[in-house]
Length: 199
Image (cartoon, rainbow, N blue to C red; front, side):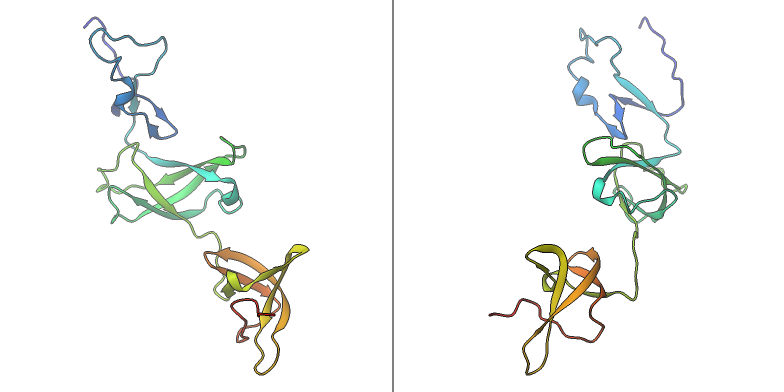
């Protein structure tokens, strides 16, 4: 009653803080935001967030860092409006980690007029095609083996009708799920064993 506080920006007033797009929620301040409660000096207890434009901020794992580049486009699926098809463009990938094994990823999203239900602090799913080879020769990961003294030396067992299986060295490429790309060593149409032959 004794203070008139003017907002420095137009937006939505949230109780609590926003840290990298994550809202703390009002429960953290419930005990202090009441009659007789006390706030600490310089404590942020309310945040004004502009509703537009919105962007996605998330953690990018160290293992995925090599795949994601500035300007890359992908799909953004909002949990609030999953049927809405949104396109995202990578604005920034941090060059230094923000936490052990994690980097900051910022993705710009173009929102149509009918996406008013999407608000700051909501979550979504990002999908990017980071590697594609339509002519790739792939085999089950379980059918590719490593030499005991050299884990990088890969091989498969070629099936030969009426003969003993032949051990064949191969060069592997990218892995996706339970499949691995074969770059050299065998060609399409060859049959390989799904597991090591019994001695």
